Amino acid sequence: MSKCGRKKYIKTNLRQMTMEIDSQQDGSIPDSVAESESAHMQMQTGQNSIPTLAQVATIAETDESAESESVIDFHKHREILSRRPSYRKILNELSSDVPGVPKIEEEKSEEEGTSPNIAAMAVPTSIYQTSTGQYTTTGDMPTYQIRAPTTALPQGVVMAASPGSLHSPQQLAEEATRKRELRLMKNREAAKECRRRKKEYVKCLESRVAVLEVQNKKLIEELETLKDIYSPKTD
DNA sequence: GGAATTCCCCGTCAGAGGTT
DNA sequence: AACCTCTGACGGGGAATTCC
Image (cartoon, rainbow, N blue to C red; front, side):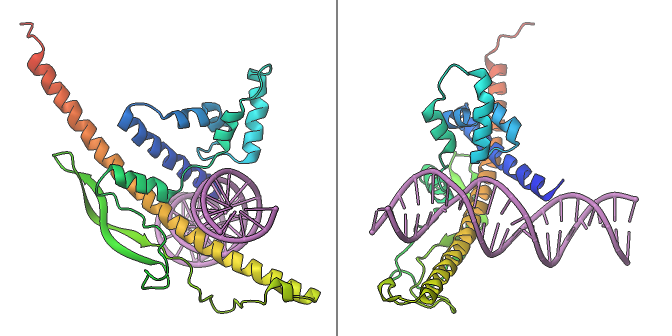
């Protein structure tokens, strides 16, 4: 399997996992998933993530054969194009629904923070459900205190004079370069954070899958027991 | 042992959506 | 409108594993 193929495979699994959890919880595939991710899109793209513009274009093209007379539903396309909520949002929603699920802390102001950088702390976060139906946590999972970028820029990033004071083309070029470097640096950090959150999110999903599987098994067993008790004996 | 493949991480870009 | 944040997508590099 190529690198690219492998990446797609991982993403497919991740999305399937999410859907599994959703369907286990309310017994149906969420409308958003059902609507925004048609089966034929999955077949065409091999991905379960939000399609790229090119993919959307392909979908629109092939859909034409099926609904050539009808106008493409604008809202449907908006939904396809729309972004899924951030991992932070998802996890925080989860944590409000399910006690024990760690919250990803919102960015704190610098006054609150003690460390200038992102601090990862190991706290117990793996989720398990007790016999009473409560969620509990064991094991280590990193949680994050995301801090606003410090005012102290990293070495090599120099604050330039205000744009109004720039005159020569050289100064303008330097300013542009500086801005680009700053942007790249910020994006680099953002990507790191994003990946960390994603990992946390995946771990959380995995834990929930485990919990729900156990719960499901128990319920099936209970059902069987009740059936045995209440069904009339034939002999 | 070396080539091929897989896995994991990273940096960058593009683009959606939020904020100022 | 400009700027910022977040995240999917892409591709590269290195370590680990598998295959011959």
